[in-house]
Image (cartoon, rainbow, N blue to C red; front, side, top):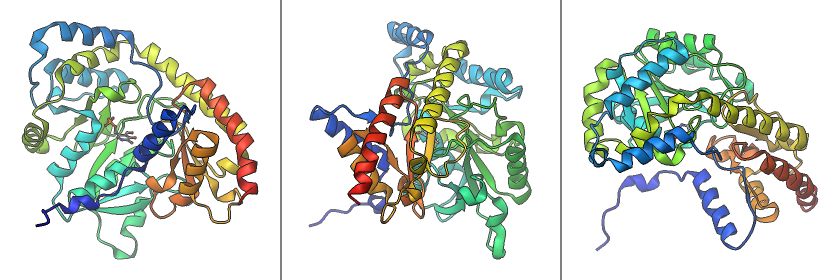
Amino acid sequence: MPLKTTSTNAVPAFLAMAVMNASSQLEATGADVIHLELGQPSSPPPEAVNRALADALAQTSTHGYSLAFGETALRRRIAAHYADFYGVTTDPDRVVITPGSSLAFALAFLAAFDRGDRIALATPGYPAYRNLMLALGIEPVLLPARAEQGWVPDLEALAANGAPLPDGILLASPANPTGVVMSDDEVKSICEWCDRNGVRLIMDEIYHGLTFTGCPATALSFSDSAIIVNSFSKYYCMTGWRVGWAIVPPELLETVERLAQNLYIGPPRPMQAGALAAFDDYAVLDRHVERYRENRDILIRDLPETFLGDIAPSDGAFYLYADISHLGMRTPDSMALADAMLREAHVACTPGIDFDREQGHRHLRLSFAGSTADMKEASRRLNDWLPKFLAGQ
Ligand SMILES: Cc1ncc(COP(=O)(O)O)c(C=O)c1O
């Protein structure tokens, strides 16, 4: 008898992870691959973080379960961070620590929306939002934020032609895959638009700290009903530690707590002890941001203009969203290009189709989170390989 499987088997694959698999298989054969596909810092977290983790591991009291919302000390420290960094006061009781921000999205979707509800997503955007929504029976609504919209979502387009407004909107600034940073006025007017129209905003601020044009405002400054999501993964260089957080509106807290208890009991406890020290050394973290800026400038200067095309202004995060449609390929196909680049030039990147199912075949995402030496070598390899590849087209 065939056994029952769930319809979530139809959830689309996260292609960036598939590229990671393909590049590690190539590396296993001895190839020296440059990783422009990874959205993770190449630097370790500040020393104080590692020391705090080692101290926590030496104390058996930190080996048990954490409370569902996480350690009180870390929740307070995050609330203090909002005061220090943004000058905004928030109640530590609204801070929910999660196993990576990934779980914060699951909590937000499950606590604030029902199956069949619609959430608008800036497109191109981080693929896991959409894939998780599909798994939960939530309908993702495409909200274009492409070159034609100045790379910032056009909310008025949602109500065009009398279409019903979505139940929620999920935005990220700085954005993945474009690196585009919304102005404070744009964030404010989106918060006000959502509150005015009864649309729940989820704001992904995971790339805050990683900006090259000053510190953007948090949506928390403009809305008490928005769910704010952040993480220790990017600016704090702690991807594998799996610690993130959300600032949750009071009316959702009870449901979020029950969901957290039943989904994962509580976030990893020793990792939270390490994360507590992450806020003590902004100077070390800001030096990495300087390197990312240098890396970005090297790629923009050294890669062929036709390869980058009309790139979005990458003022934050660590990505360039290259528009390959000017390259002169017979049919622009970012999957085929990324595949050939990996196999022939040993440079890994992520096809845009992961971020934009409709137009992503024209784009590649290049991550410059790696070392400066890697950026120079990637540019050298691509300048050498691209003419040969195009000649064979
Ligand atoms: C925009 C965005 N949001 C959320 C995440 C999830 O990060 P984590 O679960 O490590 O906090 C990522 C990871 O790359 C991301 O790019």
